[in-house]
Length: 270
Image (cartoon, rainbow, N blue to C red; front, side, top):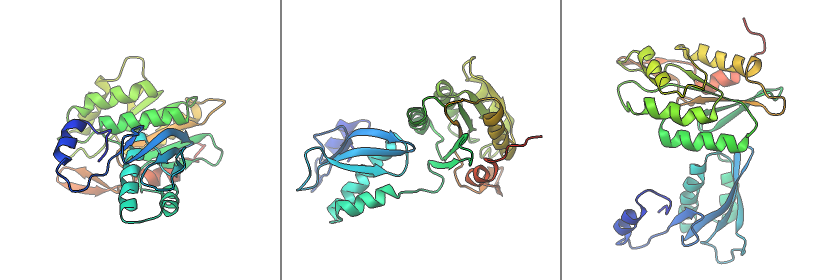
């Protein structure tokens, strides 16, 4: 059980009847297994691991997680605890963590010239946006950030207010685009997103998702450029999905991950 979870006292009370309870947490030394000194190493995360080891060094076992995002440290702790419970050794666990890759989740694509770094992720709600944007800013504090996303049609209306407000403080440009509109007008969804952008954050609507990705990379090379750091392009919500929910159908599309790999090195624009 994660001691960093919301309503932790209620969860602990509910779990009190469990025959065996293992707790985890970030900076929670009272937990059975806990992480300290979490730090970004590029788009990886390094931390010190404590607990569930009889020969644990006092400073903790150093671990590297091959995927970014603060929430992923907590996810990793749960996985580590489960692995330790069934007798898997810490060296094997650390090796697995360092090679971790989840398709479409914090996928990093870098341009050959080093000027653009693209992150493809499934982030699509307030909590995941908050974690992702803060992680990106810590990893690349001097980089301009261009974020591309939309909001799904027919559900979670509150996201149309939450997502722009979470993204704007970290972004130099927001591009709103089509994202599983279902039975809603995608332009209406994008306009509702744009209504909640703070006045000082540039934003635009490009409904065609491929054209929007192309525009993001063009902006990264022509408008939002730093002499000292790469420009970061965030393609959010769709990951490596190859279907778009339109009406009653799921229409084939090129995934964000595929688009990133295909377009990131384009330098000539019409």
